[in-house]
Length: 151
Image (cartoon, rainbow, N blue to C red; front, side):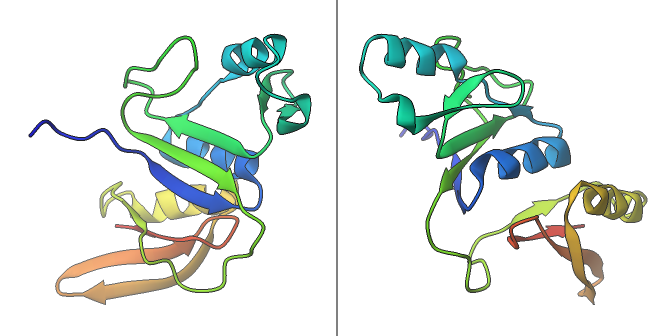
């Protein structure tokens, strides 16, 4: 069996703000879907109310935003990543419980505290420091309250 391509999808109240946070947190690229969006608008295949003009003038989907690893390939026509990718989709409901899936970031023990401080400066919050089974990590939340760990 050939490996299956995948992306992580995260529900969000503000997909573009979440994409900006995670692009900065991970050193990823905020995907630019302008060419795809403008092409579909020009062809009448998508209504304008499904799009938004971003602060930098790019045209984007109102309810979707994505980030991708800068070294991974991407499709020029759509701007979509073809490798490590996170898609943020707007949902109407708020987060109400602990994540069942989360990311672990691995800057290493020698730079963990500096990385935690950098993430806090981007809008993350530290919840607690955990030491178990010979390992230490910091449990954090992103700006919308999604948990992740920094090891």
